[in-house]
Image 1 (tube, helix red, strand yellow):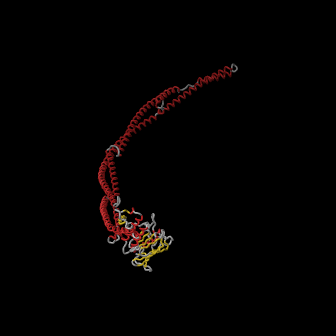
Image 2 (tube, helix red, strand yellow):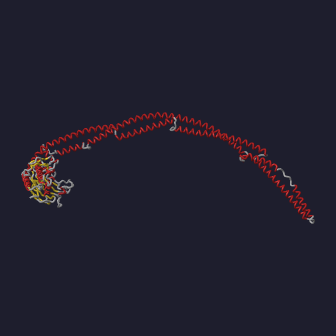
Image 3 (cartoon, helix red, strand yellow):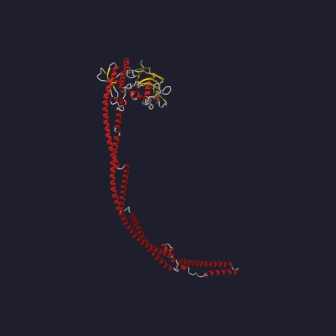
Length: 636
């Protein structure tokens, strides 16, 4: 393959063109004139612009970095020669989201499309390698001369040292195997660790389930025994309660019969007392306070005797009448004899009148007292409903008899009441005792003792039932032991299978490493020898040996050194030459021989002095005899 011409609207390049010839092409331009942009354009024309690439710290994607400064669409064309045919490839931008995604490939000077060539496979068909291998071999960017390993480059190298199959990469295979290995076990993570944890959990769960199942079995046996005990106690409690109720009722009935008898006796005593009280109340003496009856009656009898004398008949007032008549006679005589000392007659008449009046008043008073005494006597007799004092005396004697009878009836009533009240208190206590007995939960009777034993047995039964229910709930949450056991067995089988896979993968990693080391031993010496040949040419024979690791790390040894030195101990110019030699050797060995992909170099020789710059140019001239070399440089 040979690049003939470029036409670009790309980054700072605005409709600019560039032509090339076979062999070594040196494009001189000062810094910031677009050399790196032309290199990026060549790569973009071959492999397109990755529209999915995103900006990251310190890096801009090509779609942003090389967007035309003029604002025009990103586009361009490349004229090249491949397979003895001149081809023109064109890339245009239809959408800003997909720059240079519209592709065409025609035979130069015609509109005939090149069959089998499209925007995706263009670069790989023309160069013979993928974009990743192209970047690490034939495309030498400024500041990125050193070769870095990649799965694509490994595949390419593998195809060289083996059968030519380019689908195998040690790094990819190793990483894939290690990913599988990590998936199965990595530190404390992975399928095996998860299964170990699950197996431990399920083993513990199964152990718990078996323990719970055994606990449930023991509880169920205890529950059955407790239920049987409850049934036996229920029968005994029923019988004991019947007997206790019957005995209590019999005691209550006997006590009630006696209480009724005492109640009847008390009622009779109360009736008798009521009769005696009525007899006393019917007595005329009942109105007198009991503590004064005797004195009052005796006093009234004595008073009757006194009134008997006072009420005797009073004689007519004859003497008063005599004096009154005498007074009248003297008055008449004086009137008749008025002339003879009438004053004496007046005085005598007045004296006689006064005496008559006095005797008349005295007689009237006696009559009044007699009348009052007779009236008082009648009232006293009427008070006692008696005719004389003898009746009153007999009434008093009768009253004393009634009092004695009343007192006797009162004593009998009090005695019967006390007996009744005592019996009633006993009845109340008996009923309370009977009620307590009928309570059947307290006390020390056989029924209460059996009842408490039954209650305790029922409580124990309920407690056992609750425990069994809780265990059933736990078992429901924890699954069936058979299921857990089956799951555990499956996990153990899966663990054994994955463990076998893990061991097989570990063995495969070791075998792959050994195979890679063998292939490196086949490829590295040839690569190192070619790189040492290039390094000797550009250093005038100073560096004779180069050692290259599988990650393309390099060490160089001068003809006078006993051991090789790492690249970090070299000067910047020597290091660039070392990297360039390795890059050229990788490109020579890794690139297809039948394609002869151009070598694109962007200012890779800036750190060389004039002598070594000339030696490097001689080497590039030699390489340009077999493949096109395009060198962009800022040195004349």
